Image (cartoon, rainbow, N blue to C red; front, side, top):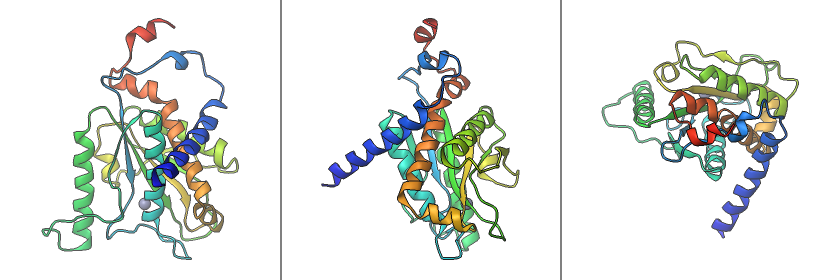
Length: 250
Ligand SMILES: [Zn+2]
């Protein structure tokens, strides 16, 4: 029964992503034929922000960031895999196994971030997408924002994602893609293309209400997966992963 349910979910995800991908006009015909070789394809690393002792931001009514991040990340994982994308998740549950050497919550959080960094660095041809939720001291700020690492390909991916997040989820969102603060350890320690998405504001009642629905999390996952798929050609080029035979047919 579980297998049937997950097949149905995957189909729904596929339809959602196909809708997002294919309703956009081609920007030049080349994207339709630029295909990645199977031998050395990109690996999409999906990072559910926080987890374990670090719940991240919490909304006024008690919705915690870490669980929302994990839910969206798992949906992206299912959807990307459905499109034949190799994926790796930095965590797949709310539990994180810390070593005995880490005594304080702060040390355990640092250890976790270093473990994620090690994992990401071990993956060849990686593209990193980190899922987070935002918060602010007042209720007004809302809307998704894509923040990019200072590595090749990150800005372009973030611009694509930001455009899709606005056009597909909330056309009143005035946020723009921006380079992430240099104080964010993980995003500033990577060598691969990397984007951190603040999907919504837990401090904004409208955003929070949407985040509580499965439908909105599915939409977020579909949009983020579609953004990755849209940019797959450019991201592959960074690693020299073109399929030259197919490219020659342009
Ligand atoms: Zn966060």
